[in-house]
Image (cartoon, rainbow, N blue to C red; front, top):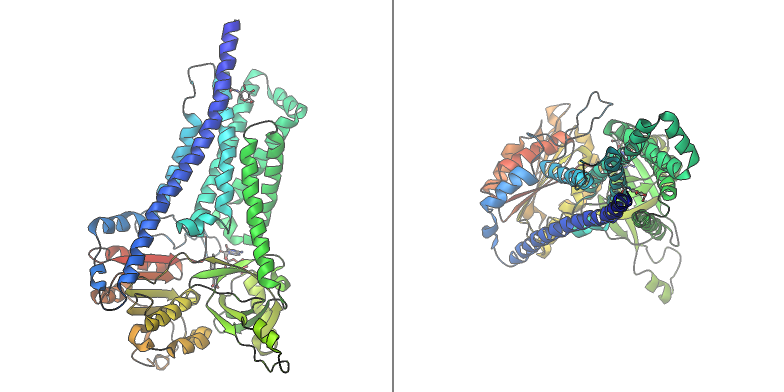
Length: 579
Ligand SMILES: Cc1cc2nc3c(=O)[nH]c(=O)nc-3n(C[C@H](O)[C@H](O)[C@H](O)COP(=O)(O)OP(=O)(O)OC[C@H]3O[C@@H](n4cnc5c(N)ncnc54)[C@H](O)[C@@H]3O)c2cc1C
Ligand SMILES: *[C@@H]1O[C@H](CO)[C@@H](O)[C@H](O)[C@H]1NC(C)=O
């Protein structure tokens, strides 16, 4: 008898330390996956850097027109492929209000499957299924608890705007958000397994009263149960339709439930090794929040604070001009989070930066400046402009505020946090195509500006830049008029930039007039296949295609780019303005 007991407790000790080993291995495995991805990204970045360098001087870009067959296959069938046929970003909608979300891409699908398989494996390996039921339940219970806790580390890491892996691995926030959602589901299921593996033997052993008694009698059981309940609530309130329909409510509830979950888990894990994982996760969370707070204070509290001028435009859009408290330099493709307390209290919304400029303060503004003041003024104030589409929440309130004010414009106190993003550089492509639908143009304007400037200065590979913009009415041209005027006046612009405007709902054909050979206007929708085909035929160097628009536009461009992979070297990048 004694030996059996000894062996049992020995094996228990074995399983306990074994669980922790497994937990650490799982972190190691994730780390290795990230490292492998990093190496791959590094080689891609290196080759695009070489490509960019090699174009300086004369035309050596011919080498880059065609792609290696293996890489083409890989890109067509894995990297750019939607899960099934061609659908990726076009949302599944039950009605215009209920949005079922979109399908992950094939590559994302593989990532998620990898994550799930790893977790299932971790929870079931080496469990001695032939031994007594109690032991099996005990081992599974302990294992799922430990693994769920260790998963909190990647779960918290992938949630943050300031996740360092975004810039390190060049993986955009929306991909991390996808992983965050799946990790969350996994943790919730593991917590449920953990709870049931405790509860079922208890019920079998006696009855529900035994369960009730042990809940009452121990803060350990009680806290665990509350933690499981709160993470189950998190699981239930997070599906895409709910999240997208009530985004602000979702965010606040999410925050509250996570706080409850973490607090009760803290109590539950008293004296366990697994508590260390919780601590690491909490440290990540606190760090992320501190960085956000710091950026917010740094960006907006200078000698003067940030203000936002909101102008209502035709077609349910707004141009927002931020006068920043401090100078700020943006790269194309970056976004910021905007807080306007007057309409949105403490909530923040992401918007791409369409234009930024150093506003010159004239020295005679406040009389004659002394020399010292002049020195201080060498860095001028920055204005940052956004183009925002009116939706139903904060953007709707803002739009109404503007239309109810004199001249359809209003100036409000604002805070901006950023910059975020900037994953994709288009500097190494000889041929660049930019597709924008509606307000999506805001993402492309800085790329156009940067590429035309770079062409004139000889710092980018671009020799052909085509901007395709699809709008409903010519009135919408007003949105970006001041910026376009500046771009069209840039040095050597005619040699490199072509703009094609497609007006889907013109009131009459007279409205559709092409101002010049390099700026053309057409009625109706573009045939993406023809447009891309034309560019591929005249391709210089490698080709980069960037899309920002609604889901069906991106899916269309994605399909065409996949089709054109061989023999051409075509890279496809999209920004979907959502996650
Ligand atoms: C990286 C990025 C860049 C973006 N750039 C632009 C831009 O330049 N111009 C532009 O018009 N829009 C942009 N968007 C979309 C913009 O953030 C949303 O339209 C805006 O937050 C909607 O606010 P609302 O309260 O009116 O939303 P609602 O009408 O309540 O919701 C509309 C949609 O916006 C989403 N949404 C709402 N609040 C947030 C939030 N705080 N964070 C993320 N998504 C939210 C909802 O899930 C919903 O799908 C961008 C989004 C992202 C992710
Ligand atoms: C599970 O963990 C608890 C707490 O550490 C321990 O008392 C128990 O023996 C473990 N059970 C098994 C089967 O390993």
